[in-house]
Length: 142
Image 1 (cartoon, rainbow, N blue to C red):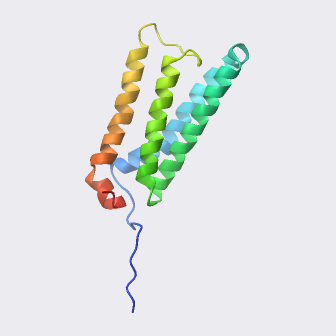
Image 2: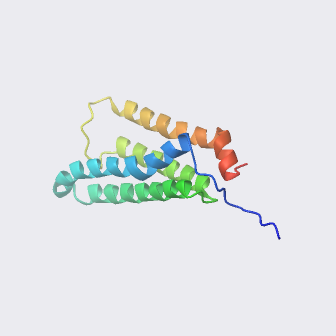
Image 3: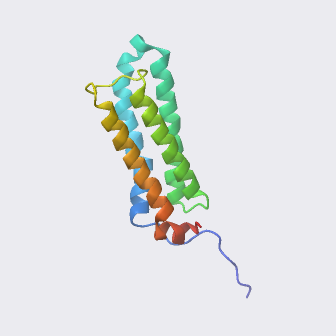
């Protein structure tokens, strides 16, 4: 009987990887839905700027959903895809928070806190993907 080698892991993901994948697949789309529903009211006043940012955010969330599904499915490039999705999400958040193109209800001077919180959130997940023994063992990341 010939021995076959498997390139993809067979055990399901666990721990923090489950949380990250569920955040990417469930929480981020729900968060976008709430944000988009609030922004649609200003679409007539702000026009294409709001529509463009909504389309950008939709694309980034879709990319994150693909990354989350890749993590859940134990796909070989899932960690790289998740890193790229987190970087794209962080960049989009910084763009939205620091430009006037998207409506917000933040108090003056609070933007820096939103940017810092977003960068901390995304940075923590990127650090986890880079340093986790579970990620290295599950996805054979070097």
